[in-house]
Image 1 (spheres, rainbow, N blue to C red):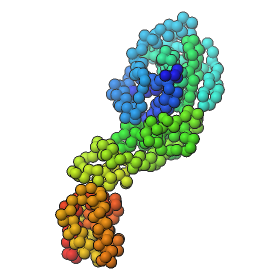
Image 2: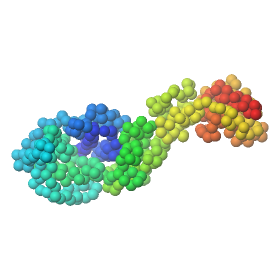
Image 3: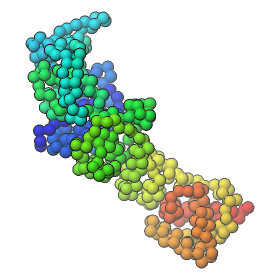
Image 4: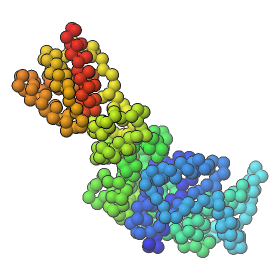
Length: 430
């Protein structure tokens, strides 16, 4: 393992949002690229808002995404002694003082020996800062401030690169002063460009779903989500936009392709990527992924045919119950019987008779059956549309949907025959 050490440091005060996931992903990929270590730190010093429930949910989401860590989690709430030792060091240098605010709350402040300077950003070059005022090191409740705890932890844990969002640039100046006051090595900073919503403003809740949990429970695949987020601030040298999972992405990823420009989050492109990943999945794997989203079991003995039937039109796993119901749901022939073409009764009679004694045990058997129907129709001078469209209506009551082979395979011969017979009776009753 190389000497490169990066970290992801979520705060358990809410759900894990997309910006945080991108930060975790780029840290993960950076560590994989360099053969380094990825450290997980939990920034839980906000006693009022941090909860174990949020922490557990965030860790579950990270695991679902496939993002694993080499060390941690280190919880800031359990590292108080370390912070106190560093406070003593700064106090011995005469760089701290205690002050009271208007409400009578006492806090410990840092008095920077310098008020201006600069730091190096790997994407942006030299970044200057100036007129830094005194700032809090230890809050009135005894917990360390964000900037102080982050610097101490990064120093103690040997973090070599700090990869995070552009919104943290404003903190970097104060943190640089703290590193220097503590006599610690400054890490290399990498501030990623903002993620913008479709309206060009910073991505937020007003743009709709922004948390991993929203997308997870909305039926998105983790590989589609990480693959799309990887392109928000990074580009593949050959323009690839879809990856076969996290390992494939890690093999292709190169930090030299990172950029500092803002990236636009397009929910339609993410949806397209998700649909593409679903279509590329085997029926067996898709069936496994669908299980948590199905309100009712798949047709017994015809599970893989059902999955294959809805897979082509499925954009998210959550759409599966609706798509399946469009095939297996009840049909009312009276709604379409008046519009059926003249040969319909003949088509229905032949199809129903041909289904008797059939097994249609799989898609191949269903294809053979439909091929026979086509040959018969050709011999009878019946157009293909006048064969297939009435049968589709009889089976599902719908004009569109999966290829008719899938309909026979999913419904099976008995149910398909019963539906066709009901459609035939409705047509003859006119």
